[in-house]
Each structure stands twice: as structure tokens, then as C-alpha cells.
Image (tube, rainbow, N blue to C red; front, side):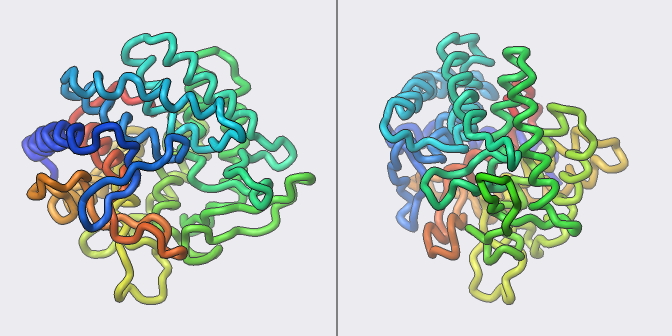
Length: 372
């Protein structure tokens, strides 16, 4: 479906689009673009703050254009200042913030400040580990002391990177403990997943699954499924542990089977009726990039299943949900859903959807310098 010419054309479109976004976004820290097509500017300690510079670094590496590197360069130092705030409002999502800023900056350029900041973030993430429950605490606040969430499977690659970089296995051990906890409690036999796991933080005892941004604790929030399949594929690539690959495949099979006719998911796979329910293009983009990971980790007899599923999603996103013909729109994808149960950021553009959409096409075009 996605031949080489289409992929090349899309990367050229992305290059033009992201270069235009530089002028439109300016010094904003984008998160959500509403119906007016204008990105907001959220606070720097917000969990999505790394995706815009991450998109810039990705486009620099793929295209070689210096303009992307120039605008991306200072973001790791900007975000590091959040560690000096009191109280520190950073949490488990430092992986999302510093992998696409400090870490990729170091890996692509050898910048020592990028290395220092990346390891600072890894130490912070490791410090959130609860050793009796074997999980990384998610958010701050007294009501979340015992909570861990599925999204963190995409933050633990920061710990895998730190282990590889420092030759210290402790980071990797923490990441694997957290992943194993989710294999045990969050990923169901059919491959669906829940968003939040609640534990007794003193004893480590598992209490219950919580719906969070999904419909309920027993539903299947589509973005949660995408975080899981992508994160577990990376965990297998970083460790070689077969249990992560098998779990990633199980989640991928559920995700693929649950997709509607145009291959772009609704916000939760278990809503009672699809009538009037919003899509989540960000979930589709994240899953598509993760499916490419799976296609590169499995033998040819299986690889084509994941590759073709990814291509179907990316093609539909590009043809039906992208803003190619809207030059004044500051985002790439429309119809993302942030938090439907709270009626927050529904039918909008989301910066992480834009990032993973570009990441998926970059992988298809042969991008090899990705961090994770």
C-alpha cells in the first residue's frame, strides 16, 4: 500500500509542513490545537513538552536540514530548569520529555550537556521506583502514591538507554521490574490493556485496575493499547527477553483486530456503540510506529502482518486526517482525543500524534538513528 514513492512524498510533505510550523509555533510549548488550528502553549513541565523538539530533531536527522537542529538545540536545557522548581512537578513522563531532547541531542551530536541532562532525567525516573510493588510511580499528589500507568512503558526506554550508556544494569533492572508488573496485572489474555494500576504503596499489594482516560477499568483505551504494544516491542529490543515480544504481539493482534474500516481507532475499543464517538488519531500513529518496531523484530512470516497493518494506519492518517491542504493549520493530524471521560481535548490535534505520525513514516523511509 505504501510504496517507496508514497513514503518519500510524505516525508517531503512533512519537511515542508514542519518547517512552516516553526514560524507558526514560535516559542510556544505546543500540546493541543483546537478547531481553529492554532497550537496552545502549555507549561514546560507538562508531559508533552518534549514532542515538538523531538519532531524537530527527527526531521533534522532524516532531512539533514540545519533549521530543524537550530530550533531544537536549546530545548533540553529549557526543560531541565523544571528540576529546579519547588515542588518539582515532573513525574514518570520524563522519558517523553528528555528522550526526544537531551538524549537524541547527545546521540546525534555527542553534546555532553545532553548526556548530563539525559542521565539526570534517568536518575529522577529511577528514583520513582517502588521496590515492594515493583512499579514506577506515575503522577505526583497524595492520591497517586500507589498508581502506575500503561504510558510508562514508553518512558522506561530512558532507563534502558541509561544502562547502555553508563554500563550500569540497575537502570535496566528497574525498567524490567516495572514492565513485568504490567505483564502480570495490566495486559489481559486477549491482548487488551487497562490504563491505571492501583497498589498499596506500603505493602505493594495490587488493589485494582482503574479506567483513567479509558471508558472503565475493564475497557480497552486505544491509546493505552498503543503505548503498550510500542513500549513492549522496545523492551524486547533492549533486553532480548521473549516475554516482552510475546506480550507486544498479543496487544498488537488485539489492536489490529479492533480497528474500524478505515484503520484509525476510536478512543476506546469497548464503547457500547460507536455512534457519535470520537477517533483518536494519536493512538493510531503511536501504534503504527510500534507495529513497524514489531515488523523489524519478527521473522518474515510474521513481519509482513505488522508492517502491512502499520502501512494501512499511516496511509489512512495521511489521506483522511492530515492537514496537507490547510497551510494555516499548525498541526499535522486532526481528530485526536486526549481525555474523553473528562471531556477534555476531544476532536483536536495533539503534538504527540504529530510526532509519532512523523516517526512512523521516518522508520518506513529507513531512519536508523532513532533513540527508541
